[in-house]
Length: 237
Image (cartoon, rainbow, N blue to C red; front, side, top):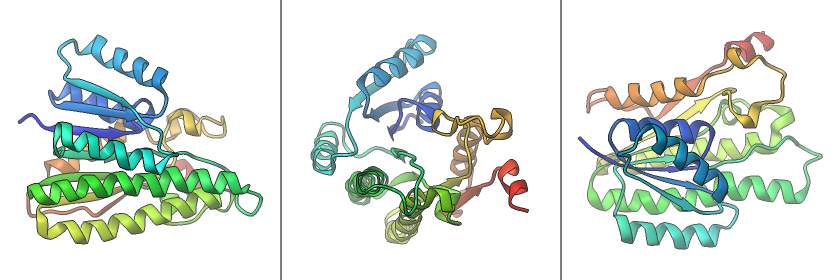
């Protein structure tokens, strides 16, 4: 059955992999991202492999919460509530006590404030419809803090906490919520050369995790799914 899928942060990395996967499954996909050139490139890559793709791209900067609030309302008016939301927009920044005020502001604005604003509006629309599924990208850093990523860890801890609250709120309304918490995934955000790419979690693993969760019976719920990276866990032994 064809579904309407929205993916934030969908022009690269995990978001792109999921957007492409849903397009290949024959679904109507709306991809949202900050950089217009990246959006155009992502769209061209997907459509070159899927000429019949039902794909819409929207440029939106998650560092501007007011713009996000306005745009999500416009999208809901134009397209209605999606069947699936992948809330994936986010940025990574190193720093704890030495992080600048602007870095702390930017990380929390994108990862927390704007992402919650967007997700809240979509969740309310799904609640009214009485159906839907929300995948929120958290991180193992939000479950177990990483000192060199103190600001990022704190932002993802907020995302994990919010996801669990949203799960409980949406449960009586037929809306499933899952917070995916992977460790280090092979994306350009983690490409610092410290860990071999093949030893990282692959983007396809996140796609498989989403497929697995969606394949479960209606009586099952997965509020939180941790996906560990062996190389990272071995370092911590």
